[in-house]
Image 1 (tube, rainbow, N blue to C red):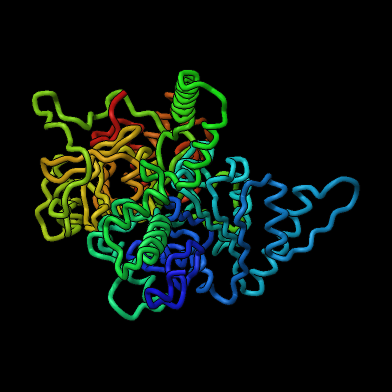
Image 2: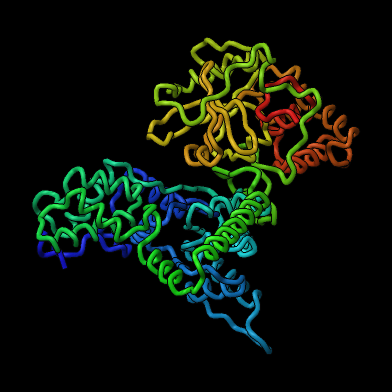
Amino acid sequence: MYAEFFGLQHDPFSIAPDPRYLFMSERHREALAHLLYGVRGGGGFVLLSGEIGAGKTTICRCFLEQVPENCNVAYIFNPRLTVADLLKSICREFRIEVKHEGLGPATVHDHLDPLNEFLLASHARGERNLLIIDEAQNLTPHVLEQLRLLTNLETSERKLLQIILIGQPELRAIVARPELEQLAQRVIARFHLGALDAAETREYIQHRLQVAGLKGPLPFAPAAIERIHDLSRGVPRRINLLCDRALLGAYANGQNRVERAVVDKAASEVFDSDGTTPAPRRAATAAATRTSGLGTLGMGALAGAVVGALVAAAALWFWLQRPGVTPVAADGAPAGATASASPPIDEAAPAPAAQAPQAPAAQADPVPAAADTPAAPTAGWPGADALITAESDAWRELAPLWGQALAGADPCEQALDVGLQCYRTARMTLHGLRQLDRPGILNLRLPDGASGRLLLTALDENSAVVARGERRWRVPLGELADAWRGDYATLWRLPPGQSGRLADGRDGPAGRWLNERIVALQAAGSVPASGVGLAARLAAFQRSRGIEAGGPAGPVTFMQINLASGVDEPRLLPRS
């Protein structure tokens, strides 16, 4: 209606997910890069989460335009399905013929068998298979577990089915549930799509108007754009709704520029008084109230009782359902050609065991004695000036926790001289941090866009403490999950008699000490009984800690031995 009035050829603020209007902010580019990385990786799960209207579906449409030609894609956008219905939808999307003999509807196995045959045959042809599920927060844990089982089919190089889950923020909480830990370990990339900042909101509005054909100046006053950002909170869909109504209001009044007052009036028509609820819902609620026949006092009492009951029920549900931790990155899939129902972890990428090991009674307290206890951590993230830029500086910051000062040009080489070894991984998870239970270096990207390193010095059920020098900051685990992609580095104490870098400690002094410690732990009942010999004992210990059994005795194994044996090392978790 107003397009011609403002010199436009198309409607610039439609809420339809049109890839032509995709505004690639830095976070949108990162989201797209994560999806592209996932499809080119070795299989598993990729998670893309974001607020309602943040642009997830539009990003997905743009991603589909860049999918390689040899990739078969199944796209499911209504996941409120049972396991059988989901498998039926997947087979239909992949155009797989399902044959069923006998009475009754087709069973789960009737769909699984041809699906597995299809995946194997397409792999033999050099094709990849991609399953995308939108609105994945609606999947039940039972259905998610079935999806995990679908990724069990693999070769020695990669899994045969790549699954992308796209959903609202609660999807992260669902995947973080303890019963879905095996799925969480198979997430190879994840990204949370945040809102636009004030500058990006202006660029977003300008971008959409230019795509729609705008040739002249923006038809929005600077104050109006600032108000749009405030009211929309930087969520693209809310920006679209507000801009569309504001342009319509300016057109109706014959104004060629939208002023702040027009935006405020448009907001009163589009959103509820709190700026969160669309106006049609408010109108429907008001109409229901007018026609209910209840008196004012009765309605107030009923509303209070209902709201109170809902709040209490929601609080109880949240308390019962909350996960102990939130994984933020994933370990790789097991290297073998045959997948197991519960994939172990390898020495290069520690991940949680089914049950975390108990800390010994003599475990060191991560907090100094009362007389030396520093001030409480500051809530929230530090500024960019607090970040550690150079990795070598981060190692020097970490070393004093082990009672050492690493002042050389190569801190990790110097650490070997004092019986310590550096350990790095790019695939750590929060569960893995709890399992290793030791401070370390995190590579972070803060909400303001600054990147650098901080020390992780403490971790509890709901928050983490990051530090540099004497300064400390406490951040919620959810915010840590958004800022951290799994890069982690730490120190660990070498076994007695080990004089150089340890890669596999099954032989020499390290092997003898390892055998003695596992024998002692088995005698104490901390490790399951096993056959005779180091190989059998080592495999039993590794299985009990979620480490790939039968492999080398590398740093992860020795860190777990140190933890179980009470070796003097700093700890991350609070003492119980």
